[in-house]
Length: 226
View 1: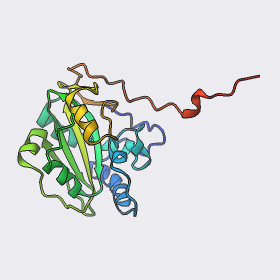
View 2 (view 1 turned 120 degrees about the horizontal axis):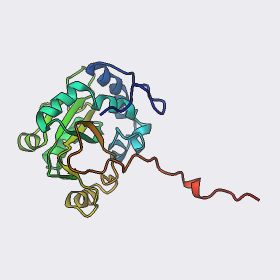
View 3 (view 1 turned 90 degrees about the horizontal axis):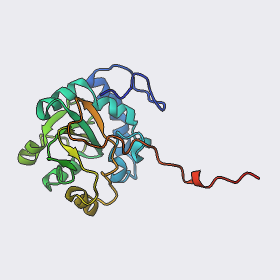
View 4 (view 1 turned 90 degrees about the vertical axis):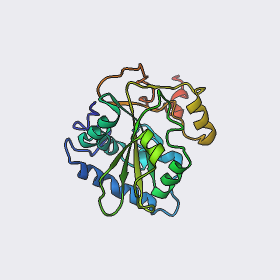
């Protein structure tokens, strides 16, 4: 899947071709700047950071993050874990890796994934001052073995992929979505846009929802012509 970053949209500064290291470097400064703010953004603003129509688009350039998410080296690693049909369904920025370490220890990674059957890969991209390569982990492996060593005080980008052989469930009554709404009520996965990164959609997932920017509040209140 190509996001069209070689023909930038909505002012994207992402160039047509860069190395993995250059893609990561382009996102480090934004993560560190957010982590150093006296008042940090709320967590829900840091979820779905790749979505150009999401709340986080004012904090981190979503096109740069999408550029990273479709990096060939990362997708090769993901493909080795979940197969050739790959869907990007979520990204999240943790301003301290320690928060994500707690998240995983509490058994929450995978708990909210609206994928049936539940399968996936998680890519961890540290935004530390010293460059570190991403880590690609199978969701089941992470649940079983835990995380690799991370600098607990450095920001961390978390990229979440699922195989396109799993169906992305948008029904809010589904168990994963129900639990997510109870435990993190300001994050709604049912309207999250999906990107088919490689291969084909083999499970009939909805790739339309989420790609429409919200209608401005004033749009329905146009003055009547006299």
